Length: 270
Image 1 (cartoon, rainbow, N blue to C red):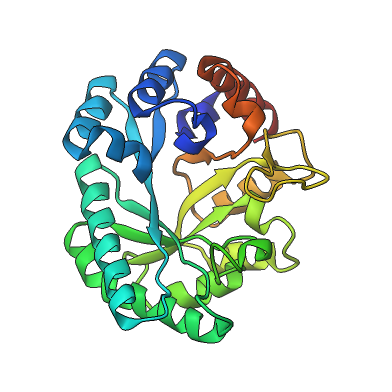
Image 2: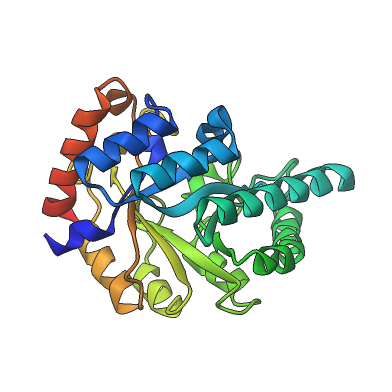
């Protein structure tokens, strides 16, 4: 199926595998793309991780993650910015032009100030990222993650922030798990035309019993995945589609079995 040429394994889906195992697994399963998580890269180091990717012939759809901009002190916000710069360098070295931003929670109760810090952090990071040929993809997270992962919780918020910069600097990442519920979703996808830097798929389990490991394989939940995919394409995005699923059942399965299931569900539901 033609759509499979866009399939990307987001590494967290096979958390049981290290980077080398995931890369070899993708090559064996003829999955052309991989999204690398920084903690997986750090196990091998940047140079060896780059060699592994090159040896398997994979393309890197994105690096996950930058962001986490808010902090209670100016010194910590600077350290966060420095870490984002390292992430930009890593993305460029690994051969991807997309750094996904999970923007970070409020260090206290002032969520408005934290959103201001996010914007300031991105503004400070843009020139460095641009110099390295890396675009910054703001990924809005579901509101249930506002307290511990991101104060950017709607695609509308992400669009508004991204629009303060040029489209070749800052865009948005559309993850169906985080945005499917939004009554403005399709309006905001259309608004993001020319700025969509990534598209992530999974499914929403009912009921949610573990917020971090809540995702399910496509087809096992309630999300209109194909409708969202078509809207994203109509907005001009035709790049890799990452399967990003945090789920203990999948992590307990052999990785090869996860990839086989992922490919099957991708064809049927994406």
